[in-house]
Image (cartoon, rainbow, N blue to C red):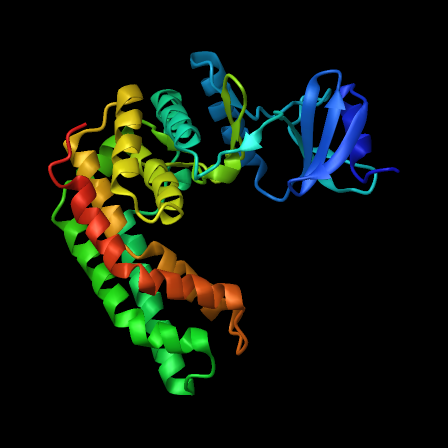
Length: 328
């Protein structure tokens, strides 16, 4: 059966020995090994920078990443017979990181730290991440807007009922995070990281970390930006810890594993602590609800917000217990 986009491989002088659909793309076995063929919808200029980052990793480390291939015309983007743009990347046979496996989690954290050691480029202001204090203030304002919206129209479903009864508590956490940032060394840390050209993956989670027998491959750098490395570390830790009942022992093991590969300063640890104060998952659920403006909300969304409410004290205690008297 003919797969749409497969003809693009001709522009690389390659043929597919076999192909199958997966990860929202086309995976192909070729003369160059396993490749992934994906429709491209972004900025070519940003893609060129992404390739620079990946080549930097290749030159300065042994880490496996999804390098972007250049076609025979020297281009990163190839257009198929139907006029659809594609990119072709190296891919790896592996399974996603299992967030319930401590071994997988530790290996993933160590890999992230080693990537951060080499992910540096001359800074480009347009690709710098939004300052965290501005992001938090914007999200707090959105939570207040959702609260006002539901109050005005009236509660019509279980999600709205749970949201209205809990939003003040989570907003207070949001305000605390903003105040803590203002009283911390955040601006100095951020300025130092940006000046040094530090690059973050932007979406370092279990889906983008492939576990192989003797190594780890990291994929999908599309959301990269210039930012503090702890931004990546926080994202990965939050995803893992949500699924492990905010296990303090696991969190500390993750921090120590990262620190063994890349030194974490006390200022960075304090910034990480503040990030765990902010109710990011709660904001995400509220924002998703609001942008879709549905009177009917899926049972999954109701389960997620109820779980956040049920775990709120555990989450609050985690931030104190994890970083109090922490020695790494």
